[in-house]
Amino acid sequence: MSFFNNFHLLAKPYQGTDQKPDKHYSILPTVLKLVGDPRGKAVLDVACGSGFFSFPIAAMGATRVIGIDNSEQQLEIARCNSVANTEFHLCDIFDGELPSADIAVIPFAANYSKDLRMLAELFARLFRCLNQDGHAVFVMDLPGERGGLPYKRMRSFGAVKWWAQGPYDGAMFCNHLFDGRGKEICSLWAYYYSPLTIQFALQDAGFRDIRWHKPVVSDEGLRTLGQEFWQGYQDNCELGYITAEK
Ligand SMILES: C[S@@+](CC[C@H](N)C(=O)[O-])C[C@H]1O[C@@H](n2cnc3c(N)ncnc32)[C@H](O)[C@@H]1O
Image 1 (cartoon, rainbow, N blue to C red):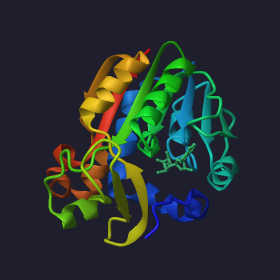
Image 2 (cartoon, rainbow, N blue to C red):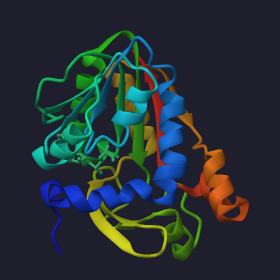
Image 3 (cartoon, helix red, strand yellow):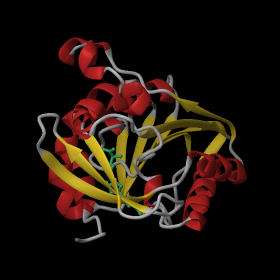
Image 4 (cartoon, protein in one colour):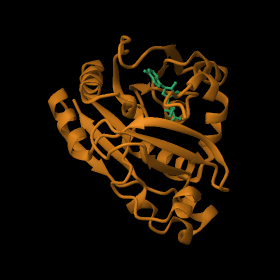
């Protein structure tokens, strides 16, 4: 068993996650809601991958959407779909220079911080790259914090998380991603941080007005899969949606 995520090899398979019920019908609309109106603003998509969040934000009228990632393969896919207000750059989020922006979105990236010091430093770097009055939108994995649904139900939404250690801050877990029909797309290793640890680390980095949000499910999601399918999802999705202001 390897604890290493090879995002270069995963670039193509990972795109299969874009149609997962949770990602398509809940994670995306929730992030877009928390981004707010990006018109006239520069938005930084941190660890953008193939641009799953970058393109809808660009379509909402952001002046610039700057996607950064440390996988050329992921960026290549993003650049193929580039539009006038998107740009994609190779950058390591932990030690590269982060472009300045009015809004930063950090979906599924901060959990790659290998220890608390790395998490704190990432938050501090994000705080510094934001323009005055900017805001950040985080999506953090929170395995076990809310998960009270059976394995099969979690799998049908698109993600099942397994502990390799812990739970404690910095403990490793594996995120198994499923296509909604029960077929596994890929699995990714990451590091857990508790909500309290995240809250304090954001405060220490200088963020204020830190808020935790419930996910939404889009009308399209409710229509396509039905109310019954989504029963219990919002209370058990094992994701933390956080907004924080500079
Ligand atoms: C789980 S994927 C999320 C991609 C995209 N945000 C999404 O949700 O579709 C994680 C992404 O983080 C990128 N990544 C991992 N470690 C990174 C690092 N140190 N610096 C920049 N990008 C990184 C990977 O290449 C990958 O594209």
